Image (cartoon, rainbow, N blue to C red; front, side):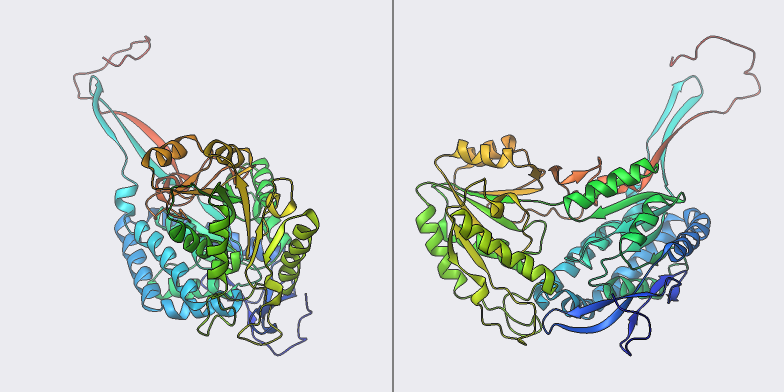
Length: 504
């Protein structure tokens, strides 16, 4: 945290009521370039007054926006989607500069956000209700879905474009207004989105951005005019967001952490499995809630699989994401150091450190937040490298004797976000998808993130609330149903009848 006026670096401002807002709190945070370790800009931290101002702008805009036609909403969504698609490389460069992931990965993140925007463009179809004629004599019943009002979105650092893009296109298309609180570690993508919304013709106040820390989050959770909260982050914070938000009378979807397993059966194509384990374990430096961090090798495949993974890891290049490298830095020096401590913990617990990422020679400035890919073998479920969500480029191999033992291991884990099985046996795959207690399952697919018209979300301690992100569940989360029973009497009908109305 720095004080105002301590530097001439640019400041990332809030976006409130259609324009930048410096904020009244007077607090600033540092924004780093993880590949150089340098502070490149500062970000305004919101206080209660700033959040209240953003919510007031959203509330004022809601009355007109909810009454805007579905045709107008979809036209603005289409325009916004086209602007983002045309300038995707620009947005990806912003993501890389503040998060550190390589440009190709950042572009992939933007493309996933675009998928949800495209889904939201179909809002006239998605909001259609039902109609039943003559449920009783001259009585019709029909259902409609209406927006909630002001909704808050609290998004994490690891996907500064994709995760907000899971939520705000659907929320806005459904007729709500939005206050987005992005991660203070990489805030610029959210302001970029706000500027593009303005270009697309979105009315002022419909989309607002406030930056900051727990003070801003708590005010959003407690504000009486915020009707719903969407959150993605670690499980302890997700639980806090859910409990605080629901206690304040809000609808909450809080997506938490993960410990994702990839089960490899003896009949699997080991080359395919090794490629998948490396890609899913070390992409985005392991800073993905869907990263594979536990590889469950069903014997006798473990030795061959570890050898193939080690061979592939030797070819991975780590460095500045703007260069021709495979993996970038971690997001902050503190997070890099935290992940590195798990390597010591794993060795102390008795696991075999096959590849030590601390010895990496990066293609980038020595001051960057570097940690290369690391591989542990002979990991057991009592070790912290297995139990904890490390959120870094650390892959742990757990050896088990059978399919049943692998399934038991996965189902005993408190998380239930994503899992995968690699096999050429269709019966085993079908059995796994039925028996595994995880919300998203991949069959020979290591990162089973659904497309936008299906919903994203896990089970157990990976989700608090009843609704997953995007898809039909996302539409339902940002709307509430209303059922209307209607009778238009003709002049000949009337009289008093105190009996209970019947449907015949």
